[in-house]
Length: 184
Image (cartoon, rainbow, N blue to C red; front, side):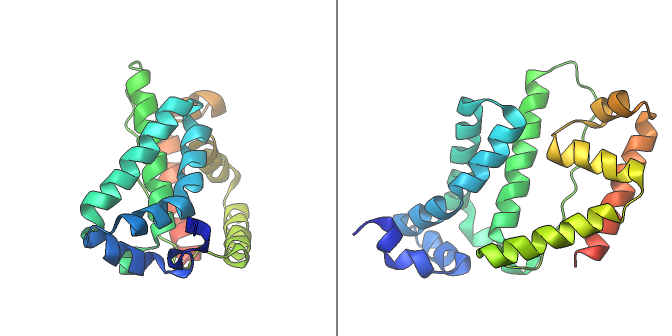
C-alpha cells in the first residue's frame, strides 16, 4: 500500500503531530506528502534556487520532527505556520546571500483560523485575502504585495516606489494590522 492509500491520508494535522511526538515516522511522511509541495513552492518563489529551497524544506520538516510537541493548534494552522516559516527562512537566506542589505525585515504574521486542507477553503480564503488587500490604500497594498508576493525587503520597496524607508515600514505595519483585523 502506498502513502496516498494509507490511513494517514485522512488523518488530521493535529493527530499526525501527536504521533510525531511519539516519533512515528509514517506520520511525518504523511505530513511531508501533504505539505512539502506548499513549502517548496514558497521557498523557490522567493529564492529561485532549487538547492536552497530543498534545504529549507528539509530543515522545516526536521524542526517538526524535533519539536512537534510545541505546536499549538490554537495559535493557527500547520500549513499557515509552514508558509510563514518557509517565507521567513527564504528571506533570511536571501539576506545572507546579499550582505549589502542592512534593513531588517520586521517579522509579521497573520494567523488564519481556517483549515486549508480543502480546495473550497483555499478558494474562500483567497477571496477574503483579495478583498482585504483591495480595501487597503494604494501605497499600503503595493508595499504588502512587493514584500509578501515578490519577497522584497523594505529597502528594495523604498527604492522601487520612491517612498522613504520609514514610510514603507509604516505602510507595511499599518496594512498588516488592518489585514489581521479583517481576516479574523
